[in-house]
Image 1 (cartoon, one colour):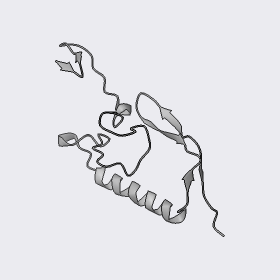
Image 2 (cartoon, helix red, strand yellow):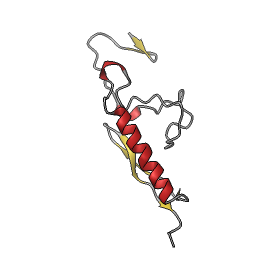
Image 3 (cartoon, one colour):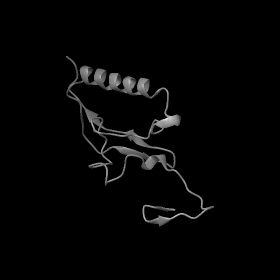
Length: 106
């Protein structure tokens, strides 16, 4: 079998790197930028569909949407003021720290 120009023979070991999901420059503009409004975003974070699709995916999406909506409601002028400190591992990519600023309530 050939995948992405690489021959994979019977018996070869293949590794799945979840951390590289949604980081394909040929599919996403600026794939390393954190963008909650990216659309379309065919994420494989919930199993990619089919028989192994996560049953809690819709609830998880709704929870994160509500969390960001509430955060924006409480601090509407928040903005990042520095580069994110990224978490890199063989299991997941994420943001460890993201410096932000906002106007304190009076």
